[in-house]
Length: 73
Ligand SMILES: [Ca+2]
Ligand SMILES: [Ca+2]
Image (cartoon, rainbow, N blue to C red; front, side, top):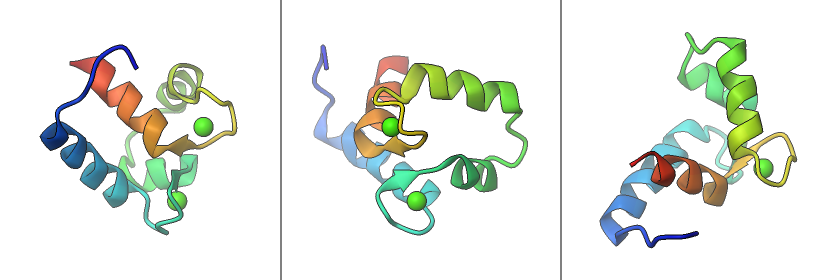
């Protein structure tokens, strides 16, 4: 990461991650993403996969999620 997130910001993102990660396995899958954001179009998911799935395993780890959300600011 190029910049440090504040602890507070990290905790907020972690809570968001945990809310989306319904089965609590530490990864957000496409299905979990869709059940949390039912209106999300397939193109948006494909774009997320391209941009955020750094290790290309088809799911988002907390690290990938934080990197994506943190970069948005
Ligand atoms: Ca999960
Ligand atoms: Ca991944």
